[in-house]
Image 1: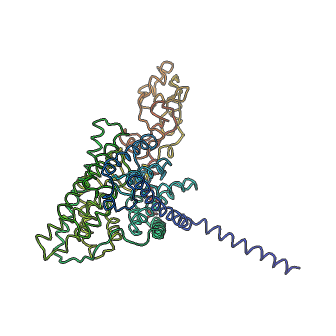
Image 2: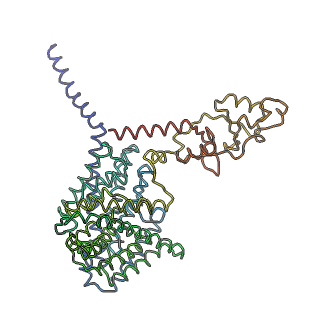
Length: 597
């Protein structure tokens, strides 16, 4: 009997211990992140497939073919369709953006960066689905834009959607946002390594192991899904190149300098188009249509500039274009891209920057080969180097761009040359213009992502999360004895004057009382409303901690009142300097701990 009872006890404990081990396993953060990364990676790969098919569908409706080899197929299309299709697409884009999109503008990689830095990795459904549709119409109707940015944006949006459904914490949401970006890049370019580094370099801003592992998993997942549908082929097929002489490296450095100029010219051109529309006060719905008409006009003579432009890029890499055509396409692709992205169309910047880099590099290679024929690797090699340099400078992501060019072409011989030119171009672009095209987009909206990781975390934290409610109040009609008593009762030597509705009227410190702090001549005469400071420094509950820190420093105060907004001024709490600094130090510790994992 006893033996049976003992055996029975053992039989019931073993399953329970296995269940408990399984529960501990699924509660492990790294395992949970890994599983979610696999799922998001698959979604990112599916996004790449869906977006390319959506472009093909729109392109078929407009032009009668779905191939991304645009100018080869455009020969059989009516010139009227070439001219008017981008304008019609522009009308559709203008209507969707104006009536449905947040802030009445298209969405892209810059919005993903903003979500990561400021919006707790949250993106709206209108932003996600609207951006997908707008970009598909843009490229499918012949607009000069890239398809990679929209894929990255939508994959990132899906990751935020999952995070919100699962109610994950902000740091995990941010990691999953990076997973979505990595899978989107990997699926777009068939480039898993580049996907990892683009996400870490541009969006997450950290190479910590906790960030690295799930991002790698998602990037590989996106690549596998994409390859299962499209096959494992590089985007461009190019001949094998070898560096003919180490004397070529100065030429590669010069190409990097010129590439920075082309990248700046592209961004400035987009800015000029945007400002021109604003100055002429053209209605936002009409802007894409007018720009589309101009792009269609260019496309009548140079259909290579329409769409993503991979076919012309491939021809440049294979040395199939003469010098005059390379220069012509460089100029008019810049114009077409500026009109597309500067007027409110959707789409990305990466494919156009690759195109421009290829044309610049090819033209530079023609000149270099003509001057030093026995020292040149051929102008096709310079085409590849130019691609990396212009794209790296434009994106502000030299590491991931180097990997993207390598994985796009599978050409390792010129990697060192690509590295030299890309780093030089990026440094010059940053020194003379902005950190990247994406940073320029954000700064145009008054958003600054520069600064340390800790600063960005501080900017994500609102005063609401740090303020205290240990304040002492008096009524405007309160007399001096009550004011003195409450000033001595509070450890901060400050009382807040609020009316019957709880709205802040002013603040009082001991110094505001002057001689009446110790004398009693006016105890029955002076009221709080008579001695308070009527315009004290204020923060709102939505003020970020960086602004709050600056405010505390400017007004030389140790604590300030927190109100609901600057109109009602309903007192909500008090912000203490030591609480702000404690949160800042905690951010530093958390960041260092994350980087040490």
